Amino acid sequence: MIGNAEGSQRVFDAIQMAGISPDDKMCSVLVIAYVMAGQSNKVRITFENMRRAGIKPTDKCIASLLVAYEKENMLSTALEFLIDLERDKIMVGKEASEILARWFRKLGVVEEVALVLRDFVSSHQIN
Image (cartoon, rainbow, N blue to C red; front, side):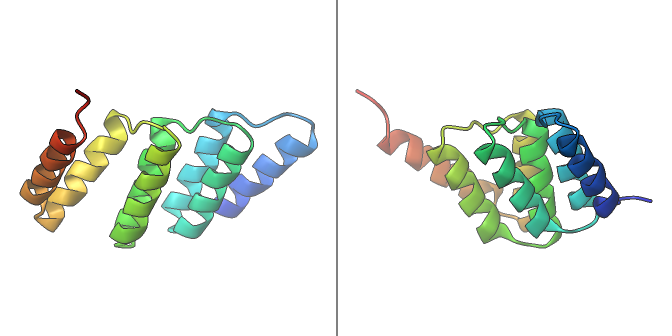
């Protein structure tokens, strides 16, 4: 069954009850299960729980959350999420960047995004 989020959550809970601390890989599996099940709200909750537990999110986790937001056409939420990552000094890696680029192409705003980024970089250069 694709995206068996409840089963993944039960396994995750059992691992924790056994006294095993979750790591980024275990959290990633849960995130991906929620993405495949189309449950972006649970993806975000899992992601935030990871961060509170001090687990650094992988690029795969970040990309998975962006995919969930893309599937539900939640661009504003995705942008807020990216701003939160930036504020917390978490870098978006290659896979997440590719998800964003594909999404922007699909929306037809690649040129506009490139222009905004160029303006941002030029106005925030350190002299």
